[in-house]
Image (cartoon, rainbow, N blue to C red; front, side, top):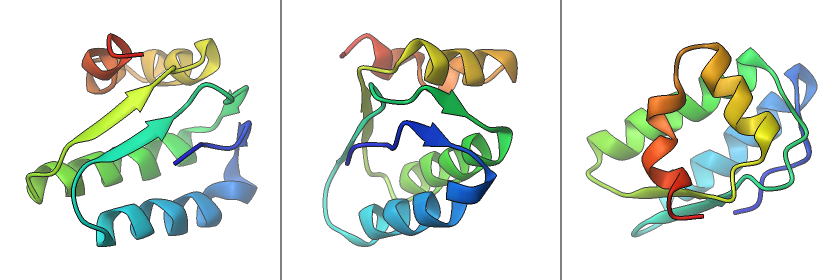
Length: 90
């Protein structure tokens, strides 16, 4: 799954729907965050909820190529540890 360049309040519903599709499918989910140029707190909340749901379902999520903007958004909120291990797999 490839994330859009702009993940703002307007795109949160589409992001949530796309992630829900991943949650409903089998196996691991790979998220390409390389194109993200802007990310809002609302979008980060949706991603964090998805990561929690996947963890609870004992399924793996790999975030590949997190862009500087994507990583900075998580870092600003003190959440970079949630994506740090996956960033090493980029």
